[in-house]
Image 1 (tube, rainbow, N blue to C red):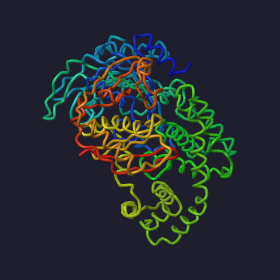
Image 2: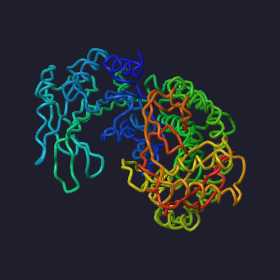
Image 3: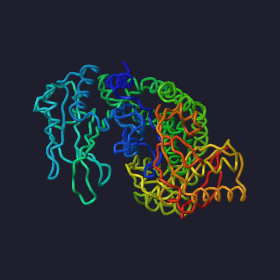
Image 4: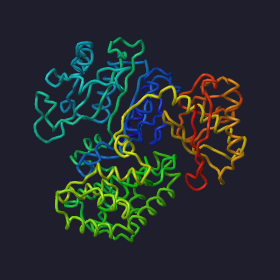
Length: 583
């Protein structure tokens, strides 16, 4: 039985529409590098925007979370993971949601209800205790002793400080061969959370006042890797069928068993799987020293260092052999894995060649540094030399220092970093933590401006120009597009003038909902058509632009101000990049 297939089948049979997984690289959310949760791409719809596919949705979503990076190597943590989710957007609520979850777990997955326990929100001064959920659980045969009432920290959800919010109910499974305790203790680590149902029934205003929402939503999330481990009766996620063949390849190329080498093998398996998904994303991320590219580089290099620790031949094709096993496992679920197979292998091969050239020398340099230390700290100059000369991400130096009971002057390192690189402290620390953020007014303007820029480039350069990616912050927009030459000053001026002409004309921005097929027939453009559901939103700006898009837009182009191109440069082979601002 495949859990993903069974999950989708069950909810489709119960009136839900399957929607495709959103890309790993989020659109219109510059606060995070990756989609970090199953519900993140659906925030606009949970906030009240109608979803083109209706009120009942189901999917499996690709996620990358970096907050637990230091924990990778243990039995349960992963940087890339899949989240199974089902949603009700103003349709069914607590009773049906809980009944679906219970029915799926006990009747489809055959988990005995005796091994289940529940938490619900205990309420606070503004919101009452969630007796509705507790009573539904009791009606399904869960005893009172197996239901725990917990506070805001454990059983309440809100994205930020204000907006839609509500209590949740979490389902726990007793993962142990011990006798199941009659009374559920949420602090007993033998109980593991397997499913979370969030009930958005309130709105918290900026002044802190709470009111009931007219339309109530349900957002659920089930971690695929964790539940497969439960179903297969193992306490090590890496011993499940998800990882079996991948670990076998690592055992073969290292000529070592998993037992006794678990930490390095888990890190290699996890990091290469995540690297495959990042480099396969249609956004075209390549290893670099900024943003997603920095994470990709860091993961590949950490995997290589652990491969070296296992004695794997650095000149062999081991990294591609492991990646091919990952590709084989996922290509039938995610089209980009199949489409970009060669790209993925090239990225991994090139980065490993680059790093292998200096790894040996860097490790020798590290040994030399620590043998001459007169304190317990690697100073900023030494840390920066390992980065600048030998390509060691600072996290790699920190990890190696920790293995030798040493510290690293990371603050000093970042000072030096700022002197030499454009990568800011925010990009290397804050942005990697992940989180959820709304899209403000200025980001909405920039997003609309990308449509005008795309249309202008087609007019000036030709119809072969297509958007290859974009990144929007409150300060500027960045737009990548296919083009085989550097734009001349005349071309840039013409593009800028055309965008400003359309802004001044005060063109209406309208939206229609139609099938993907109809949208394409009508001439609508889409950056990555595969990622969209069968029913899509098509935004038109006068008769200038028509695109399939899920992002936020202004109502009229006159809201945009003046468009100014600040820079035009190469992004990668055959792709140019424009940075622009609105004044």
